[in-house]
Image (cartoon, rainbow, N blue to C red; front, side, top):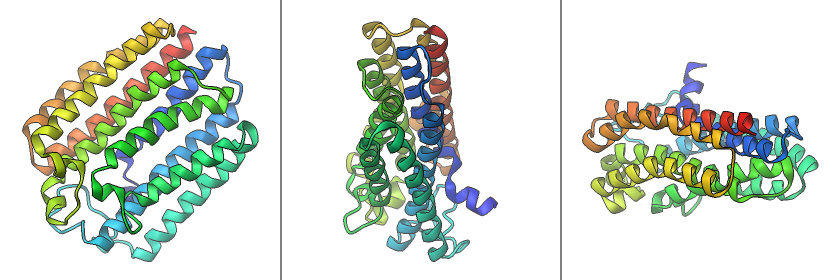
Length: 293
């Protein structure tokens, strides 16, 4: 169980949970109630399963492509380390995606067939990140897709499941959450920059270099809080949602680490801290949206 938990990479799961909470809370604030509790639970479970499936797919594909070498600074990958056979990892990947697809069918029944399209695209994005003939994660597009699917798609999709409509407030919140979710991948890629370069894995960090990647991390982390403030004020959202700004002090430590350190243990802690910022930001913002409404 410990091996499979490591393969699921729990430190990345806030990126799957946070957008569902924020999108659902925004829908609650707009409607004054939560029309579909079952839709919320199904969307949350599907999002987590897609994230786990994506992590397993990356574990499998990176090992096949030789990107997970012995000098990798990140946590142990179970396929390349020989802890689990590639076939078992692949089977587990498709089990996770299949379960998320079943939940997607339920969501399509309650909220319309557009959810099936969203789910199919999300699964495809997870598989093709490091899999397929032309993985976009090897072409420097990983950050863009994380922003799209863990920000815009996940937040607005969760909002749509409840109300079958969209709003400018949900869109603004999706940008804020997307920034922080993208920051998690930026830490991962700045940590692995040297080993990725040797493995011909051309991530965005490899393309633009360490210093520019550090600046991108700074913009994403601080920009998320600025976008939250602008969204609530300009979108006439519940002002109590600004309590999400209380997560800002947690940004200091990971910013300092990413800006000054290159060793694996330090950047692994920064990765966990970035996930913690996203989790607290989402929890406080969602609570403010619900209570403030």
